Length: 201
Image (cartoon, rainbow, N blue to C red; front, side):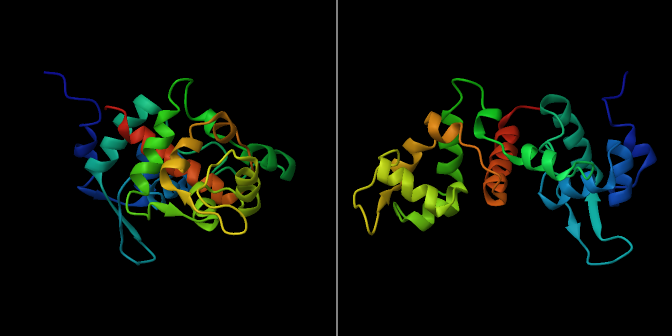
């Protein structure tokens, strides 16, 4: 009987492997392997040791390899690349949610925000909105003044029901919003990982 794909790795590697072994198994650079670990895409135990810092279960690696066949590497483009000029780096990080959702999938964005911030207060401030979406506070204020984000209280102290935020994040204005903000990129990265995790193996 033919052995399931990747099961043969168990004959060549121990139950737990190192970062270097992860890099070899996945055929990726060490910095890419580290990204997978540090962003929780592949679970690992941080031992704190210099020689074998990360202890990674081989079963989790096999699970990642199978998922990678379905959805790709799960490492955002440019996240670990070091071979780019300042100009191309600036261009590469100006991303938007439209790159992660197909037309008709906008509801995924609201579902993600609803899930990840389920314990947040039902009434939000401009600071909350900026922190949750990755938008600059000045951008949030401008969107509030324009009415793109609705609120129940207006200037100088905006109060925004969480339901209004969920309405906003599925609009073309947010889906197509681009910025080189590192915080926005992290929000997008979290959404991408969450979205990929919902896909079946």
